Image 1: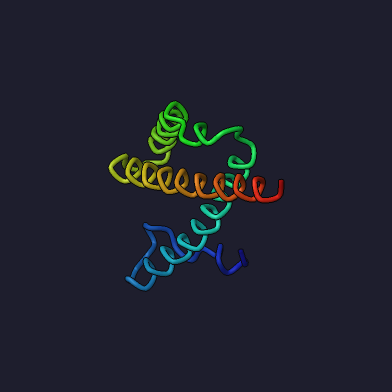
Image 2: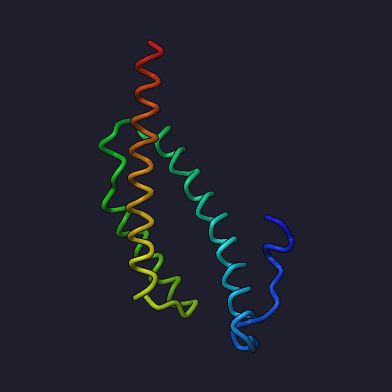
Length: 113
């Protein structure tokens, strides 16, 4: 991420034009993409570490993540009407990604033996 990607020009209170608003949203989107890519990299690690495919989807962990998101959202003023579906979708897609990574690793291990 470059310095420009993080250079904040306005707050939501100081934006005067839609161009100001769009600049900040685009800046935040670049930061979010980088953060989600980092999160995705941990799905590769999880697929490597988990012993069997049945461990990929963990309902208790999903509930734990959502509880933590709810607490954090409350602290930051983020509506749960936004946070919950965003995190549920992200977790669902990350789980699907992890299944693919787990299967690819398993196939590679099987092929090499």
